Length: 183
Ligand code: SF4
Image (tube, rainbow, N blue to C red; front, side, top):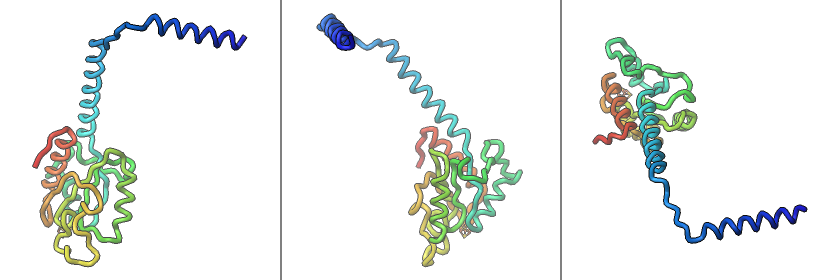
């Protein structure tokens, strides 16, 4: 019985294949366009959501962290752009602001936090020390820039950098996520 059914199926498949021989199938243009449109729109919506919901990690390494705290003051009013939602756990963040010099002994901890962050994740090197080692660049235990350890998206210069520079860096990051490439 089982064999009969298998043969019947084989025969039916053969008949279908024969009936389709020589026929040309063109892709449905309307559905093709619709699918392209949906893909483009969903990509745009995802990028728009990403760029407008940045979640920075709440941590600092040295004196630049004081500037990071000032960034939270009413004078800067970072809340108007939604930048002030610093989270205390890397699992709820997608932006890491490296504020201060990076000692070699801190690298495993910074890497661990970075790896625990949600993807896609971004890094801002905030200040001279995070960018290139700062005044301590010749020291035996200071890393000459966090870009030797993590991929950096935006650099903010200054020693100390101003809180406004962090505001600008976050705006640049938003543009970058939205697909705008700047010098
Ligand atoms: S850049 Fe200047 S202010 Fe910032 S951590 Fe280095 S020494 Fe301190």
